[in-house]
Length: 304
Image (cartoon, one colour):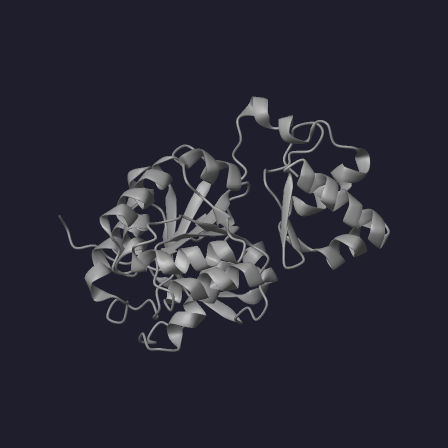
């Protein structure tokens, strides 16, 4: 096979960022892109960030491959960090299932700098398959301790949800998950064995209110991919006021105070409606934040 030639690295300024990134608090002034920049602007697609342990277990690998296989044929772009471990599994599984994938390494994008070097072939495959490499760093910036937290901000900020598959209690994986919650994105977590140190991070997130993912269907539903005959079934018996709350939550998790402000309903009325929706098992709340248990597609079945 001929030696692969990396495309030219392009610079994107903040005004041209994808919508989710432009809304991210503390967004960088510019980003650097290598490859198909159109994959950043795929209308109607869901961007799923996948993070996990660099020292993954066989269970973690199988879960990652199986869950991504369940997204085959959906409008999903897989975002990960090009690192060894679950990141590598996620990128490879995305390509194996004909999904576009975006790698956000903890370094600049020059070929003599790109980190980790051992994953250069993965980066090449991503570019061959129509994906791209994205970095907030100048092309000649090497990987160092401070670059990885910045990289994690980009991955969480550009994604509709972050899926955590394994991670120790003090791992960088939890940083990305926390950022996802801070940016009002969904945090999805695969439970693991209570006897494994690789499950300590995910289980901590679950205790803090993350959404558990135990099968392919749950992941598809968490991303809003629901069978046509199920689009309205969960909310068909809701009152107009209940649907007002549901519609607000369809864009993501909201604090109760924000629901009160946006709904123009009284404080007591909002509290009553949330309690009713909880009783119907349609929403869940923790630490004052409320989110939908199922995607909402409006009265006519169209996504909102």
